[in-house]
Image 1 (cartoon, rainbow, N blue to C red):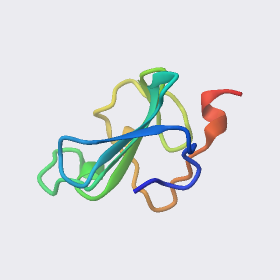
Image 2: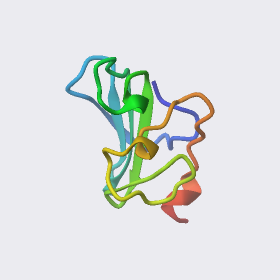
Image 3: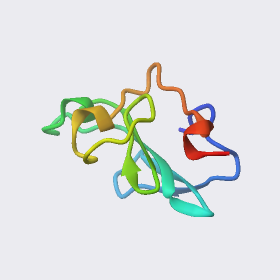
Image 4: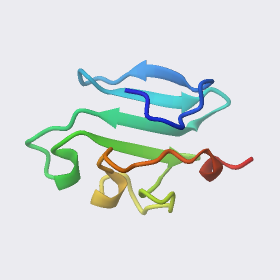
Length: 92
């Protein structure tokens, strides 16, 4: 599921888990958005339902585009409802 705002020129690959996908900038694969179906058994509460994870230059981001210390923390797993992909986070 490509969320609104993800650039059309970004590539997509399927995740290892059914129903998920990675959208990435072909000129900088460290810029990406991952959309997943969720795992009800995940220890990360925000990963138990569908979620989005995005990163810039390999650094995980929170909902507002702020760099997070690691990808495994709850603020790096964003519920898709209300999430807005903002290309300006990735520069001009």
